[in-house]
Length: 306
Image 1 (cartoon, rainbow, N blue to C red):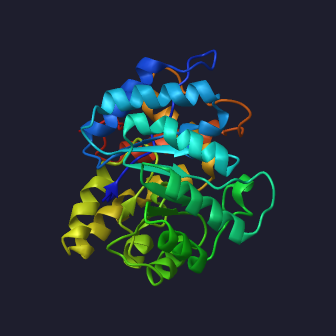
Image 2: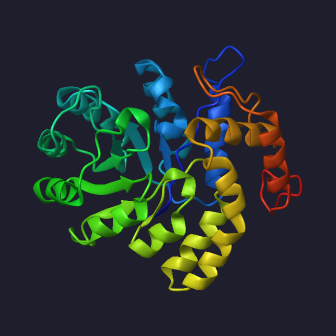
């Protein structure tokens, strides 16, 4: 089963806002070279919500080809209906994902019972394992949060639902609550949110982190320490990266896209730091401050990087 550090790669764009396919390959290779435990594509960090259907298929094709089975592949989907979800699951099955990270339908308000049935039916129809994504901190998904009992019901009724990504405010408490409702040998939980509350999520029983890209070396150092019982050492590693995590993820998701692309462009891994519109306005001073934080650390994207 999946565990560890599984970043969702961002999609680089050129100056016209088109996908930079060579840049995407370099981003994947950058993360693989950093020792991650898996690679994800078409999550929020990929700006999947700003891509066309054809672009989402193309990004999966590029990433799957670059990964070439070297680590598990996680593919994000955000279907608006159960029927569309089943079709997408069958389409993406040809890339043999280790999990389909699946957001709930969010356009219309439906009951928790309807969302439970949606995931159960998808779980029965899909060949790939499913990861239920709970992201109530994202405005469009604020009304789709499910209680631990409902999430446990999904796992109990559809054994193909193997994972949950729990992120946003109170993520650690929500992970702990869900862990108390499910068999930890059969179902695993992951945190997100860029790792901003990772220490608490690990204490709550998280099996790893699904972050963005750029500085996962620190998370990759901390995870094996935590897993081997050396919690104090793991927490010390995470403490060292916390100022950067807070600076990138603290101001919100759209800012984090700008920040990560800025840092990767500055380090020479991508040509342009374009974020598709509409997006937030970024104060250049925040990026200057970010450079200073990065350059105090031993990172591949820092001026004295390893």
